[in-house]
Amino acid sequence: MENKFYITTPLYYVNAAPHIGHSYTNIAADCLARYYRRLLGKENVWFLTGTDEHGQKMQKAAAEAKLSPQEFADKMIVHFMELWRELDISYDDFIRTTEERHRRVVQQALAILNKKGDIYQDKYEGLYCTPCETFWLESQAANGLCPDCGRPVERLKEQAYFFKLSKYQDWLAGFIEGHPLFIQPKARYNEVISFLRLNKLADLCISRPKERLNWGIPIPFAPDHVTYVWFDALLNYISAVGQFDKNDQYTSKWWPASAQLIGKDILRQHAVYWPIMLHALGIEPPKTVFAHGWWLIGSSKMSKSVGNVVSPIDMVRKYGIDVYRYFLLRDVPFGLDGNFSEEAIIRRFNSDLANDLGNLVYRTLTMIEKYFEGKVPGSKFPALPAYRSGRPAGRYVLGSGEKLEAEMKLLNERVSKTIEGLDFSGTLEEIWKIINMANKYVEETKPWNLAKENKTEELGGFICLLADVIRTTAKCISPFMPATADAIQEQIGQDRIKKGKPLFPRIDVN
Image (tube, rainbow, N blue to C red; front, side):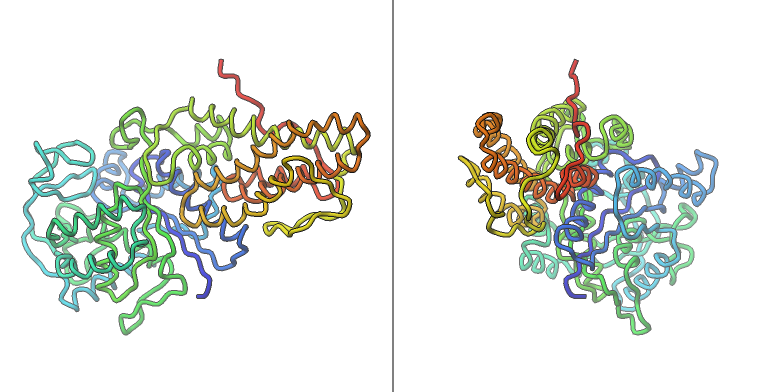
């Protein structure tokens, strides 16, 4: 499909309620989807999210809750659906790994790989972390502890089926080196390339015996085994948007994905297992896999398994949806780790939202109300998002207004460059440069003096430029803060304002 944009998030494991890390990925994906829909006007945008519902952790959590795994999964996904509603996440599809459409594709993929000779049976003996659903080498699990979560691993010895990852190691290294934007940011690209150069890939164990784990997708050629949860879950990205035909060819109007957003803790699965699985199936890899950083509490990763999670719904209900969205995408460059605290949210709120954006909108509306009886001066305004050159007849630009107008004309180009590069913080920084220039323009121009001197045309030109700035910046922040953008556009109007209360009244830090 021409000009399509297909974006995915990881499938979230539903053994416990979602936390800020989950919301971070989905807000970033939502921001990208809204950018392509609202600012670029693309019609062919597809945003996929969903839940991972198989595996040993789920079976164990369900047993502890005295429910069947399916009943437990049905109960737990409600928390995720509620969170996405609270955060105004505009996904197009929500896939569950317990759905028939997913099960069918997973079993077809297994059958195809088995027919190709890429799957074989052997004995597995090694270390396994149940909370992380991950196998580890002796050298990786120092002192018998999982390198990811720090909890004890167990030794397993059982018959299993393996997928020949090692067969495709040279292909993967060549593919990644030939596609420098496949893994982002650059530090993650370097991490994967270094791993592939220094290590030999072990084949991937992709099954569990039903006598130990019966909650999973049965392997079609080995009904006494179920599919390893990671092999199962990764295939959701293609099971949601396509299918295999009778000739084992995968067809989809959306694939390959334009961007797959993940946390850095699941980089290996998405940058090593996933592209090899796709290549072995004759399917093109995604265009980009972007592994963002973690939100830390102090020096510890926020994690359900560690137990230091913060509820995103609590934060939204306390500070508002758009404030929460803005903070997560503004405070830390996407890809780096960040420290989460309510103090940091309040600082951003009072500085960026109350002092900068909120102040610009409210003071401009107040001047229109006071000096022009609520009617925006000037008869024509630039269409958004494209800003047309030239200004309405009789318009005056004073002092630094010429520079402000010139910078505003470049804003859409700068927004496109940064957001399409997944630099959300950089995008907001570009927008806030214009907002801060506009506030400085007010202080330099001193419109109250123009009013005293009856310089109506100069005052009208000044106000007209501010209105243009507000409209332009509101459009540009709409992917990040959709409700705020809509509220600003409604208040500023086209001809007459609808002044309300300040958008962001300061929070008293005491």
